[in-house]
Image (tube, rainbow, N blue to C red; front, side, top):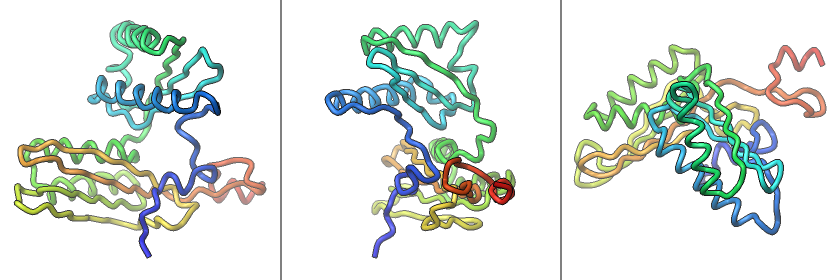
Length: 226
């Protein structure tokens, strides 16, 4: 039996929330395409801003609310807020809707699997050997208090003729434990030999729900007091 369930999708509605919050039976295909286009534009334009997550909400049909979680908010905001105002205007012109962009700074970049995967990708693109790049990143993440991490790289590693994948792990990564806070990230490193894919699973601890499941992200001590 395979274990290929997406670590984020299996926890949706339990310990994870949706990254797109809206509902429309008639305009669902249109909204899905728009969400994909928005995320692609933001990641392509601000790749160096270390964007961990992009949340999209649609309170009304004429309003799109975007929340960008980034480790470098200054790159997106720009001098005096000029950059974010310009980009917001470009999105409004493209989508023909009113757009509101909010920036939230990531407190612990080393606890975001997407940023860790992009870090490994940048090291590989800078011609650092893949095993060494993985080992250095894993050591740094564990030093910052993570419970466990697993990194898998696949492709023509080291310029080999036949593609292969290697994996490195530290600590615990309980993928089948639903209450485990597993963050997943994927990035690609473009090398002269071809594309190398990097997958990261990061275990940040357990999430204990309050009695009745009303609140999420409650620690064990807080849940015991309910």
